[in-house]
Image 1 (cartoon, rainbow, N blue to C red):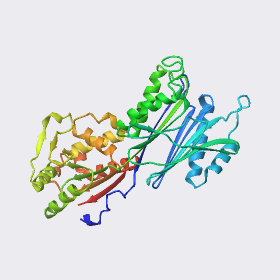
Image 2: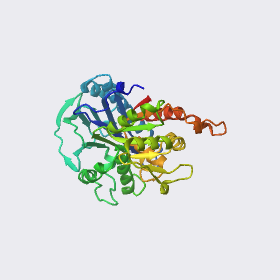
Image 3: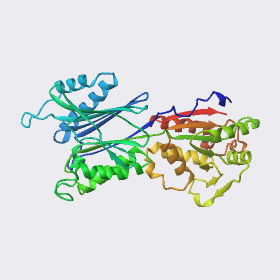
Image 4: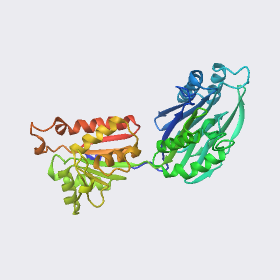
Length: 396
């Protein structure tokens, strides 16, 4: 055991976590949306592109997809915006009848230091806010390869957010709920109330997409794309799963758990008893949280979630494999749903994986899953890392 060598989990001063969510709606009657979104993370940097293809259907889908991929790809490889726009101007055609580009774009490049750069061409202006306040974003205009580009440089502080949309959102409800559509102003007012209320950017994006679909009465009259970026402090989670190999290390591991930033989870019946003993606190069981196949949760003061071990982890892994959104679990009371919700909302996860052998799990008559806790933890870790989370496993 080498807890002293575990990396410092505190975030550097001034750093933020950039949480991204997006949603795309296809025009009613079309199989493919004519709008596209592309997201790329490069180290601590984030590049997001949103594009609206002229018209709808396959042609619009191809052109908007090409625009988004070219924009993100070139910026990823350190090309400046002039090169990106020049490449798009030379690559993408212009409608001969309407004399407008076949695809528009909005591109946001931001780093976890908070520095952000936004470039927009023929898309609705992006929304920028902090908390429940919609803030003005000062833009400058310049012409690049015959295209007039709007640019803005700003800082993303904790609780700041940016929402980029195509005009299918702005025009939602046109001729039905709203004579002239939802409008940029009304969308902004709605976002200032709702975006801060959601834990994740994806939940906010899904909500805006659903409202847009309803304003079209379930039959979108135009393609619509939405990107939500939320800037916040990183969310930490430390999980203690199983007991240390040596009993004399119990106190050290529990102390490290309690001193770690963020939320704390204890998995395992014996483990929770040891944590309660070392803390000198009572362990109680919540029988009301029991669910078929999932044992009940417990409670220890100072611990955010106390669960049984292997069966709960098995169900949690099953949920993660399904790729369901956090909203499916956030209001559920059972241990596996609560653990899944905590894992999905966290950015930096440290798992203290005990190496002690539980004699109760050595019987050959037990299910194979009961003998494979470390492998389940490794697969859970891989799934979470694929979702952009940082996961560290320390065997104790």
